[in-house]
Length: 424
Ligand SMILES: [Zn+2]
Ligand SMILES: [Zn+2]
Image 1 (cartoon, protein in one colour):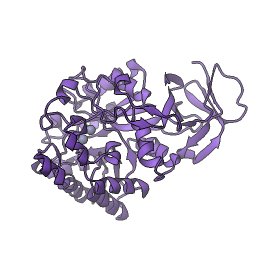
Image 2 (cartoon, protein in one colour):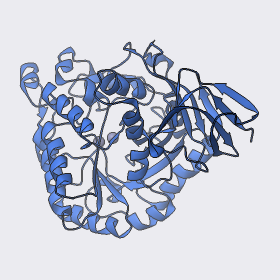
Image 3 (cartoon, protein in one colour):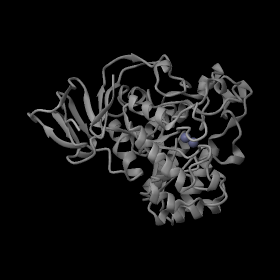
Image 4 (cartoon, helix red, strand yellow):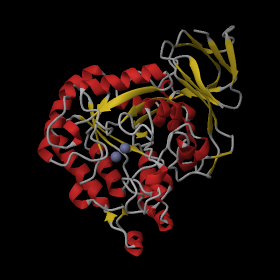
């Protein structure tokens, strides 16, 4: 494998608290060294004016293979990932059939290797068929390479099933990721509030999310399984996680998606179904609380919840269109816009929340530029104004509410295992 020297950039590695101008040498798929005058290499990349960071990691994406390959495949999803600066992603199990057994887990791992772009790690289902009734084979899926477990798309509604899942997952020290939504309070198309009432659309109340989070925290309090709240969206959800952490529940983590940091339910007045996702866009107060949760460390990491859908499905009326938007190819710029550019957090923290934090949650030995680590590296230009253009995306889908948005930060090179997999 040719060696690669990245020159003149600013190394930004939260795992070593390193922020300084230096060169980075990659050799044989590993980080060889950081420093000055590192000698010759087969290829040299000039990263002047750019950050050189650990490869970005997104622990929450949906690739639609098997079952809906016209929306996204593992190959197209992995191509979208590297185009967004991501070297590692974890894909959710709500495929058709779902990833609820060893064979499905093996399929994703094999396909990820065959495609050879971003590393794609599977998340196994918590329950068989994601039906919430009977536990799936968590142990054997874990052995085959499932890095986490979730029934995403739905939460595990039955408390006795969830309790068993927490006890069982605890034995393997794996993480349960929950899509927190109490089904008896759900069924709407957008956030339940003033706007939904005005529009005459059925709403999903904030309590649907909060109720399941509080229930899970209570069930898990004495079990202590690693428990991760997916796509947190309400002010009180953030407060619940804050209190759990204050209470010493170190096994609790949470993520937030870019749209919940940038958009509110007011956008639904357009009836544009690219503003329809689950959890729904909430109020300005909720958005502010999510940002506060990022600032004070209540929210651990950033994830896109990249959810591709066909244009003809998204063209249905608001109440009938499917939930979800794609996110991988604009995420970095949108996070910078939501968090760094207004001065909420520095770049170092943003990169930490997009690399090492996610890696720790799913226990991957990644998200670092330490010598000997996998040579997964992203080069980022923080000052390169561009317009998000969904037509240019590698993803098979186009459902993106940020199409046409002016943003500033952009990945210029994505390097996986020492090989340049994407460059601007
Ligand atoms: Zn979800
Ligand atoms: Zn999801």
